[in-house]
Image (cartoon, rainbow, N blue to C red):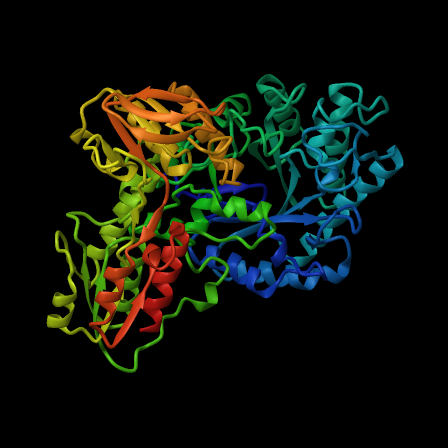
Length: 638
């Protein structure tokens, strides 16, 4: 894999960045922001890990420039008392050869009670009060002074956060800036606030490097469209900034942007590269950074080679693998981001960042594996994410590990979950696990169903049961008909079933994905859901909205508040919302209600071992993150 473009150095202002890989500025969840607004020690270590991992540039998350205009704790830089922890962060990053910029920002009406204009907006939780011109002038100085403190702390530059409809973005957007004074009323008026900030930093700290993150598109009525986004880019570039970091904004959690900055697995990756390419074309001499789910090194290298951007900004990518840049350069295995957006969802819950594939995110100091007191023969039953992770970790510690799987392939529930084309990033997780197993000392035995008698005969020192769970079938007449299968079976091998009309019972995540997959494979599909709406129990709107859009795009018929009543020769009899019986024709009925562990088999297996552990879905049905974390924990414990 040739990555000569991605790994080449680049000049930003008066410094040289060793490669074109930058860490995106990301929040970490309110639980990780200290009440004193200083950098927590574990967060400094989290940034340092990404520098160790070979990133050329680190851009910190949101640092506020004023002490009261926020509704929750953040990291501050509005007073000299904050400088020491910023200096420690900069020093720790520089030790590994990376450069670091601090991002300076205020939330404005998005979370606080002050904004450019006192208006209702889908971007605001409440109607804010309008900031006065005197207050805005004061805030301009706050940004300038925060940049100066950053320079004093040893940062290489400041990124002025004008994106995501935070305060500066609100000032630039015609949707949120309705002012008629010098800070509004025209394009130039709306740009005055950021202009004064940039010019002020340049005047007071002429040797300090300045980048700007901005929204080049907003999914918001009267907001920034593509043409206005390009106009803003050219204007900011002409102010003499050192880079443009191109992003976008979806107006609320209820609206999924056509150009989503954090696209989940149901949307294509590299979403903002075409937009960034337009801006690079407009500003050919400017360093332009692209973001939007850039996860594959070769694709990133191609974007730079093709002149679509100068650098790539990596967010979830380097949460999954802190050493992404180093591993890409050395052609080593990369832990893939599967774009499940669990990390993104955690932020909106004010919980610490976490990752489905990386159990050590924000636990970087805990990665060293303990040496076992005794080398044991370990038998792991089930090659899903929990079993695989447990086997790999136990083997790395020196144990002799055999991993058994009754199917002819590994992956557990990840395998059917990766079958739809729109979940290609999940399939990368299976490729990753395959490579990790092939490079390890784990002996993998496929197409072998482990029985209690087999465990008794082999007599392992340790038994780990990770056999997953089985689909639940509704107890209705005709459910044993050959036309009835589980949605999981449909996802595993659609070629076994003749195309025709299909009904999916259950409108949760698995049911909706199975319906889309069936539609993609030539079936005329209906979903029957007893609840009032599809995906009702999925609170993660960042995943829910695009999946609902796929259901609509693929012309899947939806029956909500509808109860399956009987499987018939013609299809499925249901009870409609009005209480009357109805019928839906079906050649195939796929059930996606829920799953439960095989308790009896689990008990019989564990009774044959002195030391045993039950992990993954056969312990408690959960997410990939739960399985990986539990597998890692037990692999370290054995």
